[in-house]
Length: 299
Image (cartoon, rainbow, N blue to C red; front, side, top):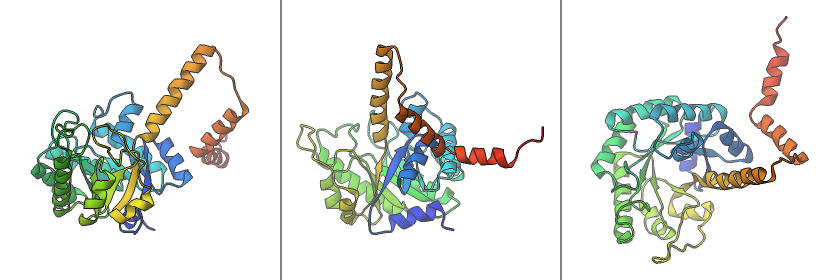
């Protein structure tokens, strides 16, 4: 039987891009799997949010525990956000061990240790992290993803010299490929960047969906991004909707909570009961009932 790691590698080596759903817990992952996503992405930001904290607050062990919960409840590959490895080289090594044991099909390491407060880490440090990750993994099918934040909005100087940042992102991608990374994630790559550099990068690309793919001057206006199939020609093999659902559900829940508070009542509608019953099926109620029926206690 093919492992989830082998399945993900097959996707990366295939001719078309797949779409992965960003999730923060196992229930969301099961829902994404049920509607047909071939992979899910456990966003560190998303997991922190489910615990009521900003991104970067939870520890390696807390994130690894959530990863294990997700991996245990879905049969599709789980791509795990490993941040910068949660610290120095010893922490990077432990991150790889903990995430691999927790069932990750892929681990993403990034080159930006202090988001919104500076520059990406030196290329040499990221190369060291990648080589360490490759040497530490036990299952060689587990995918190691190198993410570069050289084009990210929080990078110092991005607004004044975006072209230089775009060129640096390509140079970093090539260095990370040389270091042995299995895939590259150029964060906030535009369509123009992907068209120019994507085919020149020897490893498959993973990109964020829902992020601006075309910038229009200094105005920040964007044009519609291309579909996953349309991005395949530029070496993109995975499009990840990382925290898009988080933003939408947050707005919906806040609006709904405020409405119930203002009305002072909750009107129970038939479709709500149908949805609740379906949610119970989603999380495994039939299996629970089967066990209880098949193995009753004598007393």
